[in-house]
Image (cartoon, rainbow, N blue to C red):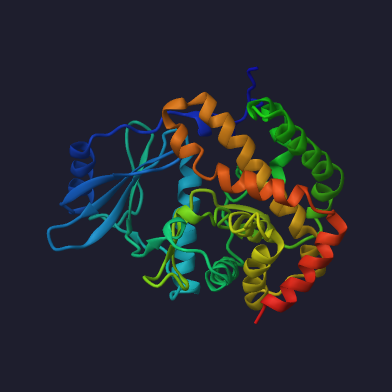
Length: 349
């Protein structure tokens, strides 16, 4: 059965073709505008085209070529947010924006793409590191530190439409046929029913701000011993939304199906120790985690079907989200909420 996202700029951006510059073309941009030369290696990206640039002196950067379908103001939103974090929390391990020869930090190309260069952040990708309670607590604590650093940051593009944003989960309904397994599809639909009826209306009463919105294991780096988070990457999904949605994203990828509440509590406890949860946030976090899992399940399947040549990339987080969602769906909702609250108190230092 075919399915399509309702017409929207967000849907168009998700399926727009990525830039296809050769390494030589990208290198010419880096040298011509930024005065940088070196070896370029391609990096994966959902919508943009990225290269790792290593200079002869051993310096490393990320050359980013934004998708031409992305509005310039959305790219600038990301640029300005990184500058804001550099001012408010200079100790946070996030990329820094590199200025071109003429002082610009964004170079508009005739194609509509925008070129930027960011500093490289060293570390081991979290998805390659062994899991532990300490590392999960570090994920939550780092997410809270970044969220706190972004408090007060405003930008004209902060309310741009992002289908990954949990508050937009209700718009996933037309894409449910993309989920091939009927029992899983039915469970996703039931979760969406509960979200529309109970969760979405309550989000407006919680604190809202600009957040990272994509603390998945491919966007986080660890130290060599895999004991703490040492890097935060990819600010491409930033948006203004309910603050607790950022925590829900982070926790959704750390839920172990063998003990989902305990492992989620490690992440939530790490957050709570830095940015104490309000009562309303704590009440809703379990449903929001489940809804992020549903979002990953639906969008991963939909995108893989639409663009099978990139299926490996789109489906990379699907197994974790599916297993976590099925584990949470098997629990009694009220009992799970009570147990999670007790575990959060225990996990928070």
